[in-house]
Length: 126
Image (tube, rainbow, N blue to C red; front, side, top):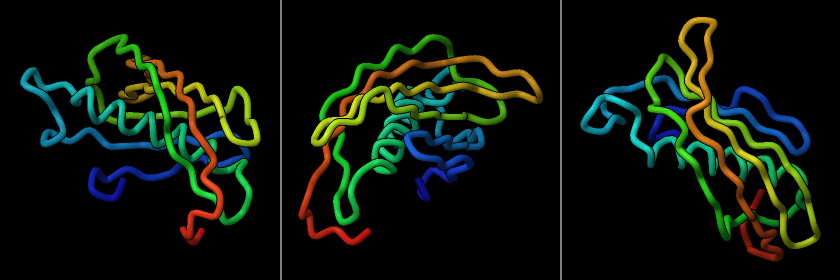
């Protein structure tokens, strides 16, 4: 997230919002944010949302996602959200959305359904 310049703007149990200012170096050939950037931010939002409900000392790992790109990602700021649909002991399902904001207007550009797993005793400090 640091590499792309994203930041967490909302953190609560089972929900995360991430903002990424539009940058020309993250665009594809037509000047829209690259689908890989949109997908990465939305996957990160889902992962962080799942992580908020996991036991201390565990880590999160995405094991599957489906993304629908709904509209070109052009605007001032990308907002990626992650909301938990079901948190299980080992597997969590999350809904992710990506929006482009320009001024007070928002347009949805992607929809994601992600499956994440809890990695226990990972040795990752957290």
